[in-house]
Image 1 (cartoon, rainbow, N blue to C red):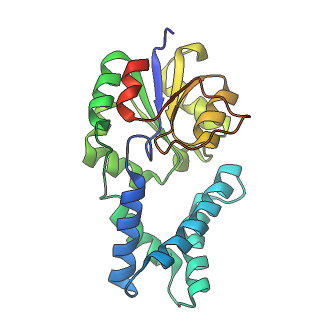
Image 2: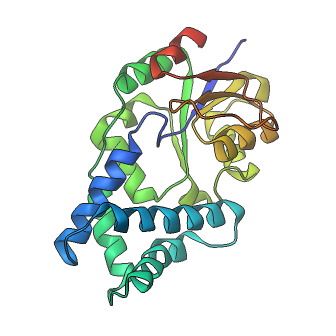
Image 3: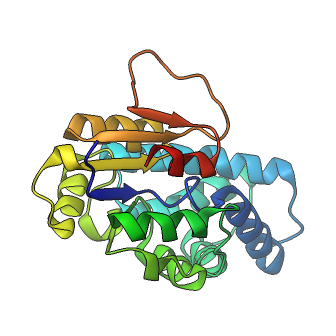
Length: 226
């Protein structure tokens, strides 16, 4: 295969973002508004997912995403509370939630010993950088590219180009993207012209139109391929 460089996604690839997100939301809601429940959280997830998809398409910027997702939620719930202020509480919690999947740190140590590793993530820079530092993953990469700092999100080619420029690798054939999101990570990387490894931990059905180079159902299987 001859790979020299890994582009590595963060959330739901090496970080257990679902656990961190839920804990951070519940704590912020209960600390500043009222007792929380699953119904409220599911409403937030639906709204949040919508805005991140819009961000990936370039129809909303990260500044508006941060507040509008919560403004919309509170409007739906009939609550008078600042979405911008709640976002600050939520991000403060999330940035201190560095939960990794079992085996993720060992995987990163292995990858760093063999390849140049660039963390490539859609997200909020302050949040992602702090989680990388708290988890120790920051020391196991050769650089970090974050959508908020680039100004576009995966699957936009510009963010993949930024990661390639940072890595110093000149040949796309020597790069592979590891990630969980079929649109942002896998199709985005494929359209950019690099190989892909899909971390399909939830064993979801793959659409025919997207064809990852490799697919794994468990994190430790990545080492068997690379």
